[in-house]
Image 1: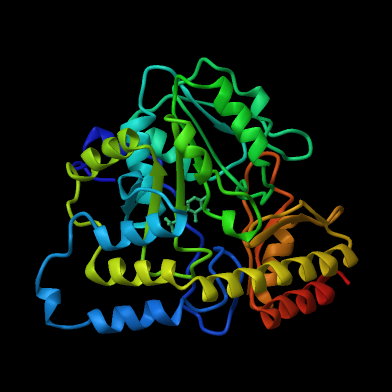
Image 2: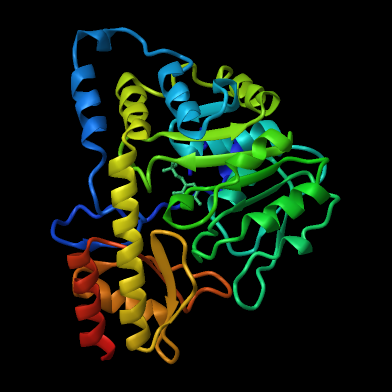
Length: 352
Ligand SMILES: *Cc1c(COP(=O)(O)O)cnc(C)c1O
């Protein structure tokens, strides 16, 4: 706190990201990073870009990357927006498409950045409770709203929604923007990108941080009809003309071109997830059905905060949220097989 702060800064409640520990050798299963490296083609593209051209500004429109994403999905480049991580894309979405008089709607248990953006941009909101079984029930979202946003699969539960439920929502809810945050969609849910052509109020956001293993590069995107994309471009060009550097543009574009690496690594994560669920079941955990690169699990009779602390003392870090309804759950990122084995060994030592 300081007398130099604006009143606005005093009122902010910032997001707290998962810990990035400075200690080596931890089994890091707390921030949903990919255990496998990025595409070798992405790395080669970035290495080739490491030259004198860095003295020049990058393409402010990131056209090379937008075209690679458009080619990947078979859509027009005018339907693609890119930004410095999908968190930045989401910030522009809240500012440019969700800030109206009526409150926006999102689940009571969801990505905890949404309420932070509401605070930053003065967006009124209403939280709609998940069902008893921790599912999003879109039928509970009233039509009179300033917009709707939810992740699919949801975070931190990992539970996916079928595309049919999203389509039904879009048929009912035509007067405000519906944002589907697909940060984890590539690990087993269905993308809503195919619905964009038919629904002018649908915006889909994605990130290269999870399924494309480029969390360190900071690239995210949005897909929607050109009128929605134009709103995001107007905000971006009033904020930062160059959110993506030269490395990010070429690296992210190559990551979209390399479908083989993407497919192989996503399949490996999904297989490990299914194997870990079996192990956790065997230890007595209840695990919500996950289509993400993490599982959300509770061990009846054992305090989740204590368990997270015990794991940490054994060099394994997972995420525990001290929030209503979920304070007895742990969110565990799917690691490489040896990391998952280390987690299971530690759990056996603690509760086995
Ligand atoms: C990780 C995550 C993001 C942000 O991803 P970045 O592109 O790394 O900023 C957005 N939404 C959800 C639900 C996430 O879990």
